[in-house]
Amino acid sequence: MSGSRPAYRKRLLQARRHPLQTVLSLVILALIAWIVWSTAAWLVVGADWSVVTENLPLFAVGSYPEHERWRPLLWLFLLCLMTATTLLQPLISRPWRIHGLALSWAWLAMLPIGLLLLAGGAGLPMVSSRDWGGLTLTVLLTGFSGLLALPLGILLALGRRSNLTLPRHLCRLYIDGLRAVPLIAVLFFGQLLLPLFLPVEIEINRVLRAVVAFALFAAAYVAEDVRGGLQAIPGTQREAAAALGLGPWQIQRLVILPQALRVAVPALTNQAIGLLQNTSLMAILGLVELLGISRSLLANPAYIGRHLETYIWLAGLYWLVCTAMALMARQLERQGKSSATEAIPS
Amino acid sequence: MTIAVRAESITKTFNGTQKALDQVNLSVNHGEVLVVMGPSGSGKSTLIRTFNGLEAIDAGQLEIVGIPLDTDQDERQIRRIRRRVGMVFQQFNLFPHLSILDNITLAPIRVKKVSKANAEQRAHGLLAQMGIADQAMKYPAELSGGQQQRVAIARALAMDPELMLFDEPTSALDPERVKEVLDAMRRLAADGMTMIVVTHELGFAREVADRVLFMDAGRVVELTDSTTFFTQAKEERSRRFLNQMAH
Ligand SMILES: Nc1ncnc2c1ncn2[C@@H]1O[C@H](COP(=O)(O)OP(=O)(O)OP(=O)(O)O)[C@@H](O)[C@H]1O
Ligand SMILES: [Mg+2]
Image (cartoon, rainbow over all chains, first blue to last red; front, top):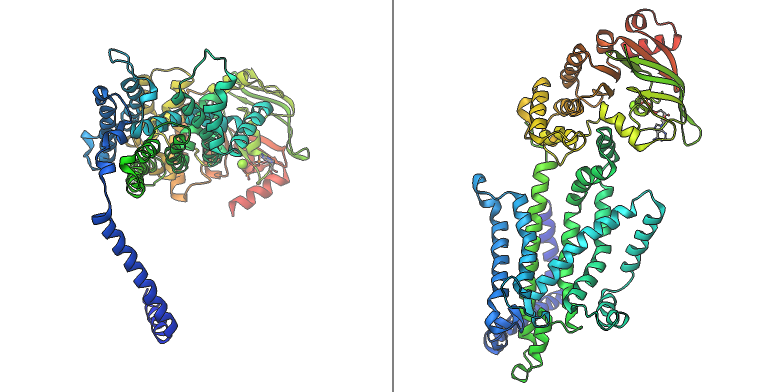
């Protein structure tokens, strides 16, 4: 530390002596000041946020029927509540803390609850998936495709390490194949081409088609992340479990996978965040999730030219959701560490 | 007296050429403690790993706790043996994601279908027997090596094995931790457990072993009762090894 300071000062002095560098520095400084100033001025005076403020319900739930809007809103509220509860866990003293397993199940339950609230049934009037939209649809797409992709990815990863030649090659083909195709192509296939192959009577829901396409795509990447986790577990763990008389599936499920998944959490978090952002591709294919709703708003003559405001708002929303996900994942990582790998001398 | 291990000219070759076991004959009675010694690479680990099917033999005949273990490994047969044969490894190999208690109850609950309550009660008893009753709720990484190895012994004992295999159980331990593990094994032997122990702990072998098996290059060099082995070993190779160990 102490050695670096004089060196730094020396460089600074040298820079002062060089007139061209001084001029350059001043120009760059001025440029930065101008950018900051004009952005601030635009945000305060020039920007017209009415496109956002007047359409908050649209951003939240899309064109969901007005008198039923409380349903997706309630779901979003529950999700916020769950997020807050999860993130506050480390601050809560032990007896009041919710067990990690209970919290996981509650999160899992959020998906069927969301589906029930949005689609209707059990006393609620049905609402066609055509009318779902906004943040609600973005989160629903992410949640369900993630939920499908995880077990599928795990199976693919296990298959790829299997001793059986045929499953191993099939899994490998699938993983390499899907990773070689751009996501947009898979989505096009799901939305536009798949209906052409199916008989006319079978009309698969558009949201469902999107979820399946996303899940099939993401599973290939999840498989690679899980495989990385599996490789990190030493073979002696398998031996120790086998020596106790556990069967091959029990060994995977009770000993290898729990450890491998813990190793894979950071990589899987990346996938989840990528999945959330990729759902915006569905805007191109006509689903009015967050980006879709923004595009349709911008097409409205009343908001002509309000691109910047809309996209800044959108970026903020995505940032918020992604940050919440990342924070929760970090918490999960810490939990795994404190219970398994961090040695506490006794 | 019934026979725990019966091996007839078993052979194991690695990579086509490396003979890890060469025509090994051995028979171990129930209640007996056998110590296996020999220089590094002599096939000690390979030998005891064939006894619970972690390695398959290439030729010969093997019968463990009355169950034949053929050259073509039948998965169900192996699992029947593994339920009744415990193994303790040099590196402990506890499951790091499970608490000490869960490490011990995993196999009884999943393999023997013992109820959780019964399995836990037994686990607490075993931990007390190993002198680490207060560690049940901790995780393996929070324990010292000696404590971890005693958990590993308790984990194997929880299946009520008829035969216990130990592969250098104290080699990865600090010298001051070796004694606590050896003491636990001594008590086990005193209780009449059938044990096959790969170890270089001469004191333990002299005191606890009924017989000593000395191996070199995959072959049985000498197999005698321990007093004879330590006082008047027949083979030159064993005497040289003992001399080296004593210095
Ligand atoms: N999985 C394996 N693949 C190839 N060769 C092996 C394998 N396991 C053991 N061997 C070889 O078989 C021989 C016997 O090995 P083994 O581990 O049984 O010796 P050991 O007596 O236990 O030695 P140590 O005292 O070092 O543990 C050695 O030459 C070793 O290199
Ligand atoms: Mg060995």
